[in-house]
Amino acid sequence: MLFFAHLGLGAACGVGVSEADKLLVPASEPLQLEYRLVLLGAILPDLLDKPFGELIFPSTFHSGKIFGHTLLLSACLLGVGAALYHARRRTGVLSLGIGTVSHLLGDATWGTAATLLWPLLGWFRPEEVTGTWIQRMLLYLSSEWIFFTEMAGFLLLLFLAYRTHLTTPEAVRRFAKTGALPEVGA
Image (cartoon, rainbow, N blue to C red):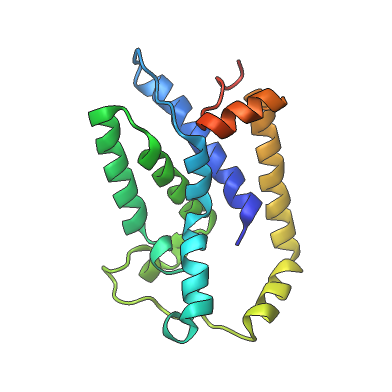
């Protein structure tokens, strides 16, 4: 699980969608994403799949990338989210969907089409697994690439916090309570 990498990419995607909405759909009421849910969506596929695929049912799935890493989950969240936004101006489910899409991008899931396009291409393909779960986690944590991507995600989160003026205790409390960010660059 690339925790900070997924959070950083998810936050950046959320800000990007908000900025694109302002440019493409000039409206009196701009899209106000719920960034707490964008961040949750950015790690949701791993929160769903890692426990089930690697700990609870390892002999069935042999993978930490199953249902949460499918386009089906993200498409459902985005579809329901878009409908709720247009009907009631609620952005919670849409925000969650944007976060899950960012996760799929971060994991480069287009390289595992059987998972990404499940159930269209059949059942999930097992990953080649070596060692115990603990051995794999220790190897994973010692990877330079993992360190680099985690640092990049962390720095991106810091940059976005600075750009959105999320740098004071009051701003952080307001974010924790509402999930809304101040205007980017304001």
